Length: 176
Image (spheres, rainbow, N blue to C red):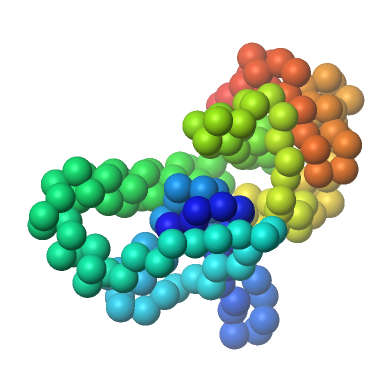
């Protein structure tokens, strides 16, 4: 489980291509992909100074029998991860570049708000390359979309600092 910091989950193809499969914030569980197969499908890379709490599966299973609330929390985490994956699949199939980037930023705002941070100010720990890989867009497209959203007043941008002055307008840009 991520205690502090931000991680990205990546796969590397045989030809050396890198694909970002997700971003993980405090409270998120890393390594869920390894439960079913007994091997991890992704590597996790810290994007800043970070800490994790290691939860060995055998100990988790043993504790879940004794603490039903722990089992419920774990099942909820699995469900959230499945939902996140299904949402991304839908996005990639139906949304244009602007909608993908807008939705990504809105979801990130929601996730940070749940952690107690301001919902209208993001510090992106991931690069535009990483965002592009995650959203199946080129780095240039991600940069152009962020610039366009900024020119329209939907975002304020200062390097990795992103402000969201008007959620309703950004939500409209993300709609499909």
